[in-house]
Image 1 (tube, rainbow, N blue to C red):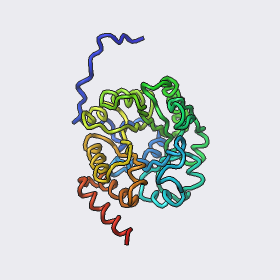
Image 2: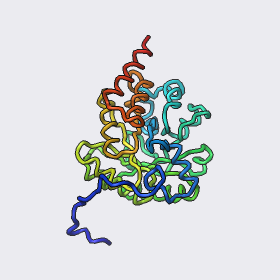
Image 3: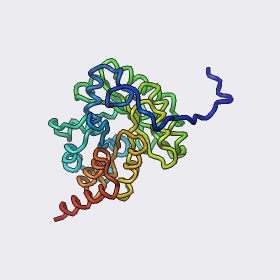
Length: 294
């Protein structure tokens, strides 16, 4: 076992240095062709970034505001997302098979919001993910949680299956109500996920030191939208995330709970792919919201 006494805090993150390899997805230049092809369904080759629409919340909270009807509220948005993240049940019942978005399937589950959320298990067989033409599968990793070891083992098992079949694995850093949300914690959680083999890591943005989180993670980091924010605030968070090294965003509530989900999705795309400032993107949102109201 490693000696943990006298460990020095990391400090030289090289945030201005280029990533290794020639592939447009960080850390994937040595992967097999099929896995890189699937990653290219998630990350646009021209920008190396993604706008992912997440609506997998129902797997532990049930129907929430904005997700009452996936077929009428969410399905119309999917053509404008680079990738969509949901459960296999939602995909089969509510998303048209002609969608061009990369499919990211929730692969962990177990407890509801009424129980200890870290008590999760793998809840998806990789063969079913292949039947559904998934580009990636997503699993929660509860670093610091009650069931931390099991969640890390779940990730490792899923990575083994993903490598066998060429399917990417998205590790989601799950933050419990008692866990601190700072750069030091997220450097730990994202690095563990990547070191265990995750091809993409989803985490939260923090205002102080986020560039060290992205620099110290050898695979792409995408930023969770988190709780519903005013539209300009959410666009500002997305902009800062990209400027500080994130490879995209995975937003749910900040899109489907917006007064204009389509307008917000278009605005986020402007920030992530076109480099728009938050205020510029907000004008796109306002124009589309006004047009929808006519």
